[in-house]
Image: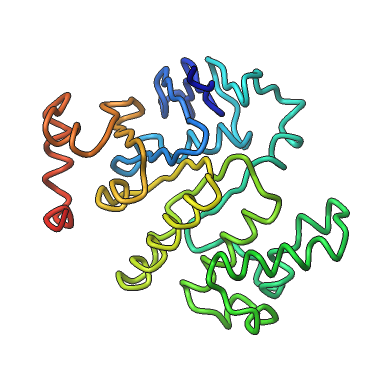
Amino acid sequence: MTADPLVQLIGISKTFAGAAAVHEVDISIEHGKTTVLIGPSGCGKSTLLRLIIGLLEPDSGEIRFDGAPLHTGEIDRIRHRIGYVIQEGGLFPHLTARRNVLLMARHLGRAENETVSRLSELCALARFPENLLDRYPLELSGGQRQRVSLMRALMLSPELLLLDEPLGALDPLVRAALQKDLKEIFARLNQTALLITHDLAEAAYLGNKIILMNEGRIVQQGLLTELREKPASEFVTTFINAQRSLAVL
């Protein structure tokens, strides 16, 4: 018997100033899998993440988290079960790497010995040198900042990890190393993740399911081979052909 999805978006729509950003989208995010949202800028990817984490409210439709409807009054409780990583990390510049990672755990009153142990585990998991924990974000490289951001998102052992183009600003070698590490981390933790990227090769490498969007709608979803060999529309073929990095796949 197949387990129910961790998150379900059912008929979700969202408009801004009368312009539709998302049109009646249905998405299921499966336990222990990495679902990837991909598509051109402005297609609605980041809007969907903000709807899931409660930064926005849908105009219509329903979001279900772990089988229960997600209501406005429960957002704070649900957020403690979600990790969120954004492009360039979103770290607080006035806090050291250590304090950035521990921020929410300390806010929630977690025991000091518990947080210290967890921090050490995360440094090993994210391949972040512990001797750099007392540096400020500006004293770290872009790749190191993203590792700190990932550690912060994983600190509370979230059931769902949301990643909004976390590797987009990195140079190719650093990005490739982090892709490899992310794949290993997801597998080791059996992590449920929703990842946004513009890079179809990255989506194919990290994702168990790719959801291609355009103009607020889902155009096609499945594996890269399905999108490439059985495109649902001309847009799918055009989008794939525009991704020159796929030549290596």
